[in-house]
Image 1 (cartoon, rainbow, N blue to C red):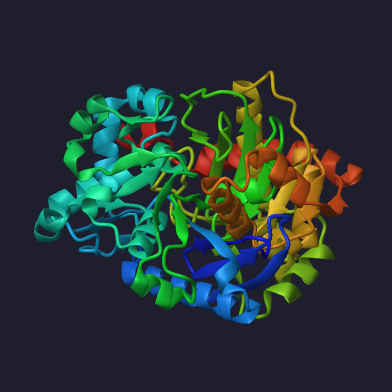
Image 2: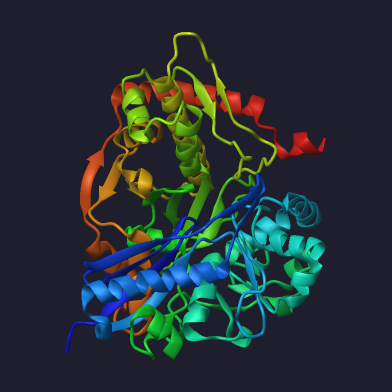
Length: 496
């Protein structure tokens, strides 16, 4: 009998990726299919749920065809973007667009929920009031009443795609535990829906799916989905998980004190921790990891979007050229405020971006370097708060994944600001590998997710802090905070 293979899928913002793995972590095939993103206004960003399914199955089919081993696939699991929401009808098909994590139309609802529930929301969910599930559902109920009436259950993308693969109807709809913090509706420590929060947000409990663990087997490939995927009908499908949890698992961030920088569309700094400890400063989100008993403390900003925006405003040179020019510039010459569409954590939706300290001697290399440094300075604030919250956790090296992981200058800046080594890893498709491990666990092929993850992810390169830069940045990050305090309105200032 051939060695069992496992497919992991990552339904992202810009593409759906799939990869086929052996249990050792060796990747036999991978594919990506682009996803349309509909940005109709600055605060209105949607995607079509059926695009998620079509792109995911096309990517799986590409892997199955190129590997020549479709009959050896023993399980499938899907990871996906986490803070957005979509509605399905009784038959499991989408009846609303996907309300993206980039869509901020529900800001008034966020404020209302914050006023109504205050710190109790943070205490139960581990997450501050933000543009995520509860506020989005409230927005649909208020402004899209006809579509809202059609919704039987609200789902996240990974659960929607898994449900389509298995042809599940709404009675079988689910959400896995790694998404619960973003729901604004769950008692996350107990992994249950909270009657207090559903009542306080006005969200009907009946519209919420059942809660499962990532490794629960939720069904198997239907005949039609198997045809779309190029796999065998009856192939088991696991519940799957959020992309951040999948990336952490795939990168081997499974032990307390390990850090992970996901340098993708969102720039996420996460630390593996030992307990659920809500952050009442509303800087950090506390979420469940894929490994049983693991908690992850994290915060994020739209860092990847900055690097797509930057060339556009500087005359459309290649980003690589801008980074090369930035590498020849002195560090810390000016500051950049990176919150072009509002600050996510701590929430300041009215915030906007700025370069501060410009003079006639500066070049586009200086402008670029300031953008890179701004993300590192934001990370410094995140890490400082995490260590305040978890003084019993000793921070270790930072594992870096995502498109920005190969940006050597950015890694050097971040390492120098944080005072921690940055480690590149000897694999790719981290979220897909994390999902594949979950699929393997669902069918009993893996009994220790943490050990499997650590064994399969080797170090490929290391960037330590630059002593001269570290000394400079120790001072400049204090100045950066002063700029932020001056230019970014706090929640209290906005409401005054």
